[in-house]
Image (cartoon, rainbow, N blue to C red; front, side, top):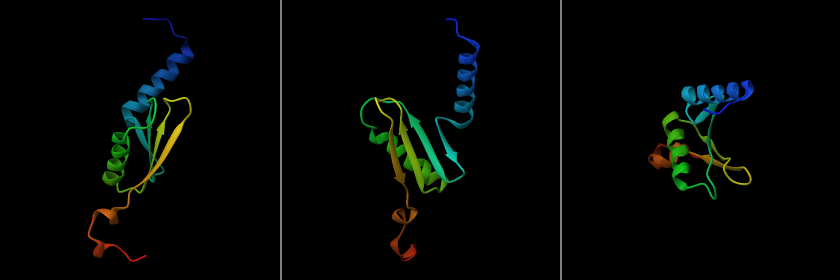
Amino acid sequence: MEHRDPLTERIITCCYRVYTGLGSGFVVENKIIVEVKAVTGNIPDVFKYQVLSYLRALALKVGLLVNLGDKSCQVKRLTFNLCNRILKSACPVR
């Protein structure tokens, strides 16, 4: 195993603890899902559907899909409206 300095080791340990406890995504203030990926190029649709599934499962409306794998940071804001998934008559009139 390669030698790492103590600070690097602490950071890596913290990352693993967060990942183990929360998974790759997390919920901020019980309102917004943040899913972090590292892919080159455009964010594949499968990751967008993943965030939408999380939103539906947790009954949340907003998710941020963050891609740190390209030259610049990409952020996609995704919304899930439960009314789009159920009968129109059950939705409140706007």
